[in-house]
Image (cartoon, rainbow, N blue to C red; front, side, top):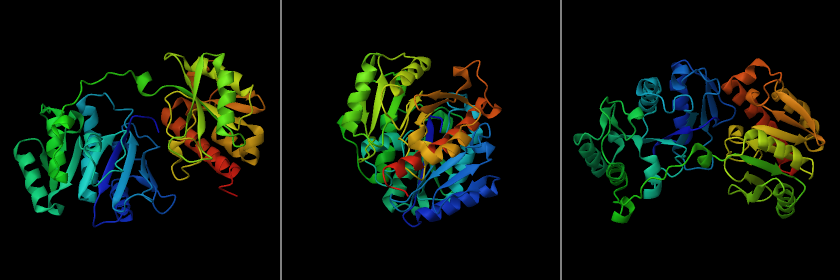
Length: 398
């Protein structure tokens, strides 16, 4: 899913996650969306232009809440097309978020960018600084002391009435009021945090350092990914490091918090500034030198490798994948179908697909590869095939 991502976390102690999912789907279906529920919990919302600026058919993903706390549901969507736009561009999106929150009517709703709401309903201060920038609390479901505290926030002009509750936002784009928010962020968050949890952040926690400015490249560095189903991480790292060293690359192992057999060797480019074209040349050279199952170039970094998360393949996209023919085996026709119409190269006993037409100006791409959202759908389909093949190759699927 193109970033940045916006997470809407919905929590209610009296309603199950499945119950919240039913409410979300009912509301959005009534508003004209197409709902696809691939399994009991997860869902994809499509054909709902007001919620995604340009009618993105990839739409809104509801993260499978199984394994998390019951009563919590997370809805995630890309805001790439409206991020940085003037407030009027955000308004249709905000209106739909406000309508959805009121229709679902949870005890608490929070809106966060690139920060899942897993820590609800009782976040610590560090999590709250990411989760409580924008949110809504249902006053009728609050304890007496919570309700009094949020009423005080309302009287101070830090929030506004919305249905049965109070909506607040430190971000002007998600503030339904026309007046800009001029309140210092740490003090604003401290009031909301104390109102909800009953705890005060310490003076040290409120003493925020000066913000550090990072470039988009530093926030999401381009990477090369390499994985082998038949080689240990230690040996694979040694082989990748040796092949990468002559190309000015540094290697490291990243397991994304996952247990074996999933750790993945990442060769991260050094220094910052290496172009995607240069990384593609690096990839071509390295896959020709060592035995791999698959590899790929990630222009904007990535979330997780294909395989571990079977329910959410959109988190496991490999943007420009190379795949060993021997490893992919009988799944190759499905992968070829998912990636049909983009640039394709036979390379080192495998196939490399380059999915961005800008990288191959003289290439012959099908029309849907020129549309970012259609391209995203194709890459999701490819990630699902790669994930199934990865699980099969380590014995997790027949």
